[in-house]
Structure formats: structure tokens, C-alpha cells
Length: 247
Ligand SMILES: [Zn+2]
Image 1 (cartoon, rainbow, N blue to C red):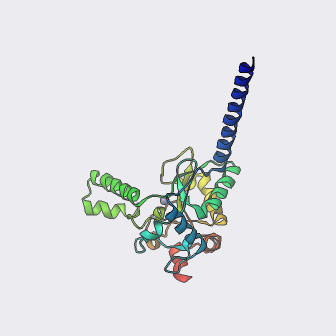
Image 2: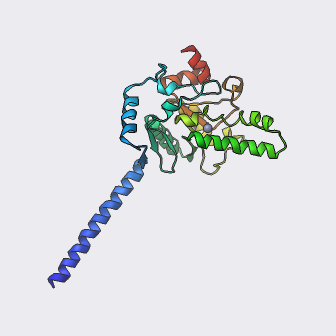
Image 3: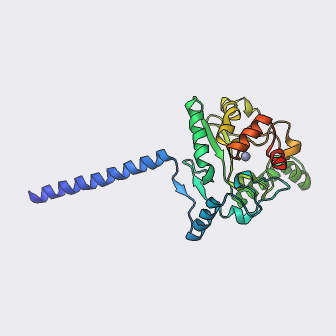
């Protein structure tokens, strides 16, 4: 009898432990941060340094770092970025995570279904994407040089992509996850283009600005620059290049 009671108690105790685990898991899933870039103590220390110091060595604020074909990424800076991983496996610089999450939540609250289909990329991943596009153009009959030049207009040259910086996200509608032309017509994009600045993001490659940015119109690529800069860039309809040159 005692034996039976004990085993029932044990089952009960085990159930409580398992149930507690389930609750914890669902809470962390709701929190949407499932993993933090946290490889070693050394990296953590460096990350703390980054958080305390809002400037890079060159004196530029981290959120205003300009990355384009003539402004290459500083790899030592990139190696020390602290990343937050999202539920769908994408990850971004932890410092812009709260505002990104708020923007996504508010967009969903309006009845839209945005999804982040691309975010932080390693240098190797960017190289892979670049090479893939070159191969596609070469299959279409272009020679290597022509294919490289054409690719560079739509896929940033490795080392010059904002995705490697951890501050850029490609957002699309959950029903249409492929990056396609005409995406600016999607209600999700309409909402984001109109409201992203409130969360510190800008539409980084606007229409008719390719001569300044070096990248064709991308009505899906949003870059975090902080609320102050985003408001200025949005209201003056300029690019990050123009903002950086004049500030
Ligand atoms: Zn992008």
C-alpha cells in the first residue's frame, strides 16, 4: 500500500516537474528570444564593451555605420556583435532587437502578416549568395566579368553587405516569401514603408536612388539607424549615404 502511494507521489512529482518545464518553454517562446550569441567569456566581455561604448574606433555610432561598395565592413567589429536569434532562426544585432520586435508586433496588430526572411549573414553566407547569382547570370550566357558586375547591383559584394553588419532585415508577407519585383504593392510593405521610421528603421534602397546607394530598388530591405536618424531620413526622403555625408 505504502509502495503504491509512494509511486503515485513520484508520478505526481515528475508530472509537476515536466509541467513546469512546459510552462518555461512556452514563456521563452512567447518572449521570442530563444538564443543569444554567447560563444565565450571573451566575446561576452567584448560585447559589454560594445554596449557601454556607443562609438566605433572611427568615432561613428554603431547604428550609423555606413556599409556600401566604397565603405567595407570592419571584420573585427563584426566579430564582436552580440546577436539575438529570433524564433524562425533569423538573428540580428541585439541592440535593435526590441524595436524590431515592436515593429513586427504593431504590424501584425494591424492585421498584416510580415515575416523576416533574411537578416544577419556571415561573410561566408554572403559570398555563397553572391556566387550563386553569378552562376545564374553565367547560365544565361553572360561572361564572368559581366555576370559579376550585374550581380553586384542586386547582391552586395561580400564585405559590403548590411546583412553582415547585423542591422538589416528583409521583410516580406508570409504568403509571398520570395523576394519579387512589385513587392511595394504588398500591404505589409505599404505599412512598413510608412511606419518603419518610428522604430528606428529606414527603407534602405529606395526607388530612384540607386545612383547614390549603388543598389537597385529593394522594397523589402530595412536597416536600423536609430529613431533620430530614421525620422530625419524619412521626412527628408534621403538615403543613409546622404545623411552620413551631412551629419
Ligand atoms: Zn536585404
